Image (cartoon, rainbow, N blue to C red; front, side):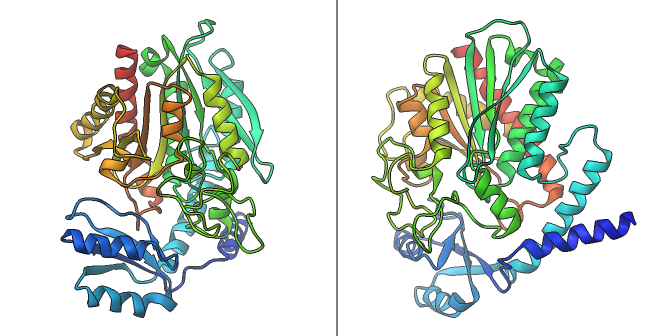
Length: 418
């Protein structure tokens, strides 16, 4: 009977994936000079091509997903301009179905065997994440507080966990961490959960991080989009509030009101980088705004988790100019990069968003730094898995444990300096 129920669960989960991605190809393209880089930039403006990344370095491949109807034309364009490319996945749909089956299997196993509702062998649904936070609040009432400061557009609870050392002191400095602004970046909420696990359930080893600081963590900023990637469209990026009769969602990381819409964001509502009809048009970004402003003066370190690309990025995203205090932020980011390289050999690129990746105004990191006055504000782009945004379940624990090395080192640096 259990086997039958398990099989039914798997079949239902596959049936829910309305966008199958059958025949979609993933390409890696090398631009060997500035002209070829400009060709790629022009191609990335075509909404028919989903560019996963666009590295500045000439030796780093740009990755793009192309649907079947556009592949012949796309390959002809690459050949016309003598761009070197390789097909790294010739049927994304097959890969995603296999990954989904494995994830459902691991979720079921963790629910049967784990003492808590969360494991690091599966990507968990939003309700499971919220349940884990509630379990921690019940199990560790002196050190954990869980609140619901608001709901998403589709009325999902955005739960916030505040972690202390239980000494009862109020008004401590704050490290604020969030994840899941972009729906398809599943490894980011997984990392937020791992940070929570380390601070709460592995408290003895990490108590120094909580002596003078409280940690405030919002593990899924965009739960509507996150759930949509589990049930319908795996590569969905935006929120889910309707914008027009045919287009849904806003890029929440282009929706913050600091140089909003000036560069690196689209005014076209169907685009993945749509900036929103107005700044803070989304209830999810309004909630993050209000939380950040509420910690003004106490907030010392804002860290937002994304994927992918092995980057530690800091302001500004709207200009190549640097803040006057950029060296302070750089030192913290470098501490994280050094800790990860020393621990696992993985290399991270450190620098301002515009200078080492691309210009994109309206991001949460710029807002946290310039408006909410967090002196250290960093975006952490975790490594690629699978074809980029789809790490396997086997990659979760290695990735989150590695990333924790960097987060812990950055927090220690902030605690020492601020």
